[in-house]
Structures are given as structure tokens and as C-alpha cells.
Image (cartoon, rainbow, N blue to C red; front, side, top):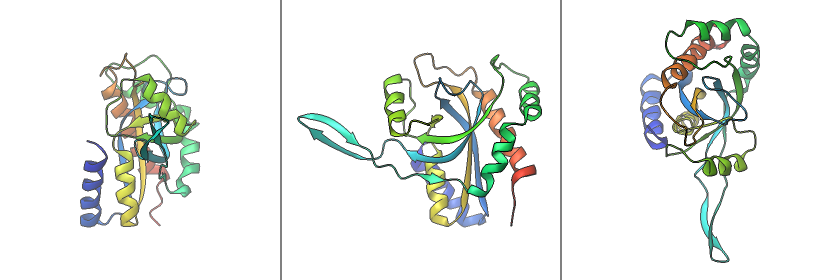
Length: 198
């Protein structure tokens, strides 16, 4: 979908329905050394990894980064930390998925999520994104647009994406459905047990 489209849709839905909180599930590329395929990523905050200023230094093109980060509502962080330790929940989500899935145990992680406008299959670009924030867990294409539009509307947002690949040359679609399933199950648990409408 991309940043612009997700921001536009979020703005329209937010103005029409006036929700107290906007939730988004979906898929993301994970940082291979930190997460496994299918793992659930809760965006503690997100930013547009492509933002900044293009300039030249001694004839070499460089990008000077100055990312604007948007945080999730902090009152929900403890709930997600507890959920990350709920082995029974994570094992059930893994077992309930009927299709192709990886052999790794399902995990839930809370941390930075980078958003960009292109599908990545390049470890060098992934490395440059990690240089922007060394704790980056994943990279995807919509979170910042949703969070930015939500922020402008004065509405909090929770972004939960799950890892379907590692944005490298081994990228394929094998685990997209599984990742979509695990992120949707985390959203469902959030609504049932963590969300506080007050």
C-alpha cells in the first residue's frame, strides 16, 4: 500500500468513524539476527526510513537522516511485555495455523519499526536502516503513514506486523499468510485483554 496511501485511508477512516484508537496488523520484513519468521512485532515507535536530506559531501551523494518518530500509547507497553512472555498464547497461535509455517518457536517483540515506500531485497539497504536505529526489529511499508495520520487526528495507534521475510535475496512469499495470521491474532488478544477504552 505505501506511506501516502495508508495515511490517506487512515485520515478518511479516522474522520468518518472517530475511533479512540487505530489498530493495524499485517506483514513486515524482520531483522534476521533479532527475530524469526512469523514473529510478531509491536511497533514501540515507527519512522520513515527514507526521509532526510540528499546532499553531496566532497562530490559523493549522501543522505542526512532526521527521522520523525511516532510512539504507540505508552499505557499499553506493559500489556504487550506481558503478552511477549505468554508462552501458552504464542504456542496456541503457532499450533492453530493450518498452513505452511516455519519450524521456529513464535515470539513477540516490542521495538522500533522502520517504514519505507519500496519492497526491499537488499541487505545493504537493511544495514543502512539499522544505522538509523540499531534496535530496529523490522521494516515495512504502511506503519508510519497510519501513525502519522492518527497523530494528526489526535488518535493513538497500535501497529502490529509479523515477519514474513528478511528483506534479502532469499525473500519469497512462503510465510506471508502465516505472518498475517500471527499479527491478526495479536490484535485480537490486544482487543480482548489489553485495550482500555477509558
